Length: 282
Image (cartoon, rainbow, N blue to C red):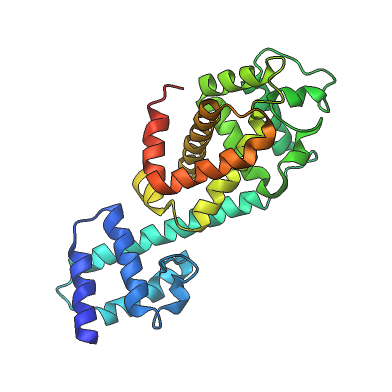
């Protein structure tokens, strides 16, 4: 039995390198060697898969060499194993970085956070000064709920602010159109508030990241925060299109539209949404 598993592992390590094959291998290792490598496998994911931190990589590699019965002539397999383990480490590192930013409360006493808020205002309302300074009802024009936007980020923390700022800077046409629509008199009760919606989208993104649903996108595009910010944008575009297509009569229908959007994301896959967002020209 062990001989057969060893052969399966060696065959998968011999496959052409690709993000898809790396994830197949990560899942297969969890399936075949779950007991031997329990500390390196995330059993909360469906299906479970290899997920390890940098400090675990060498010990995991050593065990897998023995399980796969590596010999002196297996340098190519060694290289493939190191590459895949490195990719799994990068996934864990990005997930931890995003979670750390989520846990960082946006604070009015933090100069970095304040600078990000000011940059966000300038990006969404270029050339316009707020009425009343830092604490101002003008924040409501871009979709915050109160006069101090720091109170709106709640459980999504600084990561939500960074994603919103990235969208404002990288996709100004998209932002300008939807902020302008929201600010049109009479629309505040029927159109989605831009900033609050973005914060909600961040929550969807982080749920997907934690569930391993973004692993393929991350390995394909790169394990960096910008990748997550672009996924955020793709989800935001999809939500905005759904809202305009369904034309809810009230913002109280936000939950219904959100449920439909998330169901469609599950059905079509985030990769197709990224392609659609890239093609939207905004």
